[in-house]
Image (tube, rainbow, N blue to C red; front, side, top):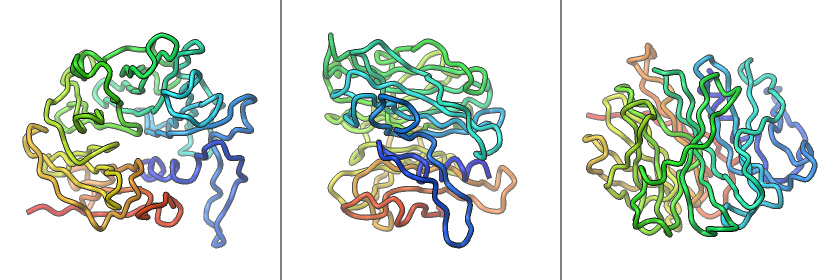
Length: 316
């Protein structure tokens, strides 16, 4: 059940600078609450880009951009911090807002994403960094780490040189918001976009001590998510702007090569989305199931229209 909540909370609970009231459905379904609302902290104009994960101890951790002056993205704002709230009771109650990443004015952090290492019980929270005073339009790729289920976070670690080519220094590149994965072998994997050269996977084989990127561009793809299918195949569910649908990329050789197909059943306006491994037979469930959440509309992000599509990917 925790995985289901981890999927639904971003759909209903986050808003972008809009003050909303708690709501409930007519059939008596649970009340949904705003975790981040501009009425909660004086002087904050906007919250955007949610991410959520279940910690090793079962706590649910939600993170989001605290965009102080307005809703503008990283290159347009000198004051974006990353904040979190935690729940120890499966989303019934939540901690106060806590700051995980906060640089001095002029430096901003944006687009949080998580990977949980279930071997070391550490949580990696990735984000994109820019110093708008000294290196405007230059993107750096960072993470902070928690060893206590999200209660405290380490100092920032810059991994740009490990997961991006030096010739990409001035390129528009970013780690995609949301989450990455840990494969059954223990490998950590995540997606990173360079708008000039395509989507790439990056990862770690030593539990985050060092990182590398796989130099195989994946196209068409913008912000995307990777999961591991039941048979070990890697699958990327990709945002593609201007197509009105999503694309699916699969690899059976750990990302060295990819097979690409359009997914016309996944109507999409070219927005960020999410896909997770929901159940697997190997974990004791009756079916292998993945869940996809996206804006089910070709041109407008109407997330409330169709917020969850369930797909069982069958392979020969």
